[in-house]
Each structure stands twice: as C-alpha cells, then as structure tokens.
Length: 233
View (cartoon, rainbow, N blue to C red):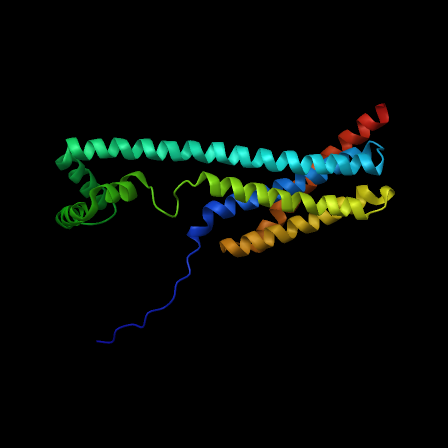
C-alpha cells in the first residue's frame, strides 16, 4: 500500500480576527476622512481648515476605533469566560450527563453512537473542558477574542487609511481637492479591497467593487451636504 506524501495546507482562518479589525479600520479611515475633507472643501473652506479637519478626523477616528474594538471584543471575551465557567461547574457536578452531551454532538456530526461514545470518553479523559470548549461552545484558539490585538489593529489601520486622503489633500491645489481626494481615496479603497481579499483568500474583484462602491456613496453624500450648507452660509 502506497502511503500518500504529505502536502502542505495553508489555511487562513488564523487571520480572521486581526484581518477583520484591520480592514474595518483602514476602510473607515479612508472613507470617513476623505468624506469629511470633501465635505469641508465643498463648503468653500480654505486649505488650512480642510487639513485641520482631516487631522482631527484621523486622531479622533483612530481613538474611537481602538476604544470601540476594545469594548466590543472585551464583551465577547467576557461572554466566553462566563460560558467556560458554566461548563466547568457542569463538568464537576454532572460528568456523566456532560459525557452524553458530548457523544450526542459527535452523533449529529455523523458518527455512530458507539464510536461517538468512545471518542467522547477518550477526549474527556485527555481534557474534558477543552473538548467541550471546542465542540460544544465553539471556542477555539483561532476564534478566541483578543481585545488588545483588535484595538491595536483597528487604530493603526485607521491611521494609515486616514493618512492617504489627508496626504492627497495636502498635495493637491485647493481648487482640485474635491476631485483629487475622492479619486485617490477610491484608488486606495480598491487597493485595500484587493489586499484584504488576497490575505483572506477571497475574490479580489468582488472586494474591490464592494469597498469602492460604498466609499463613493459616502463621499458623494458628504460632498452634497457640504455644498448645501456651504451655499447656505
């Protein structure tokens, strides 16, 4: 019998947590900062006011993203810890019932009852809490909540994203800011979509269209509001 040669498999699930936070942060940084710059420029403001608004958007947005991600993911981590404590008490008080529960999970996944019971017994003997965390609660190292990682990734990604339209506004002549900033921002969004899709193993074309479309909508709406209020003033 020929034993098949081992083949490398490069799974991308370990990137889910930080990639989600980084993509969200960068996308928000580009869109919100570009939208604010375009809106202020459409209100017939001078270049110093436009750049000041962009810098304020970068700093405030990065802090907001970090705080929001930390609070959100911390809540998820708290829930995970609470579920684990409940499971610890149940394993201590009702070990046989918990063993049957684990076996039932494996039966629903396709094992016959006898084999499911044997698998549950062996896994429980090795580490019953880990088996229940993984197969009953769905808590794994790949999907585990990491608040500080998510907060840092979001803040850094937002700052990098926001710096792109801000740099475009700083380099562009005042009269051309309403055109150059959206163009540079849409190009940045397309690049972000392609990179994030590549890291996540998804369709690049779909990601590019998705982020560019909603970014264009956000900037168009903000520019319209800026023109309306600028004209009124």
